[in-house]
Image (cartoon, rainbow, N blue to C red; front, top):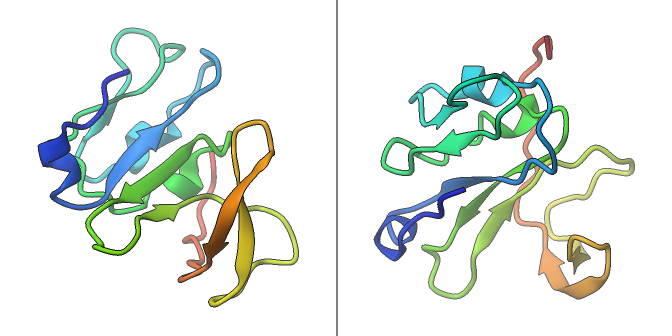
Length: 125
């Protein structure tokens, strides 16, 4: 999977998709209003991102049933913002300080919740 260039990362938020395996799935493709996400070939292939089309709009995040999509914004000067899916209770609140975890669940750092966004209601399939 390609990664955004440093020039693109400096422009604003961009999507990152980390599908762990090839399965028949494409809600992210349908969710993207800019057609920045595609699945070339068969629906079981991994999604590809056209970073010149991606605006980091966040609409793909709640559509992914596998919680494999997040958006990164590296443009703030003091810190980066990472928008992630979250499906557990209790929901974090703005201002909460929580542990940032790696892919294995080990705590890496403390992070501040700066925004909690409710996803639009829709049918997954």
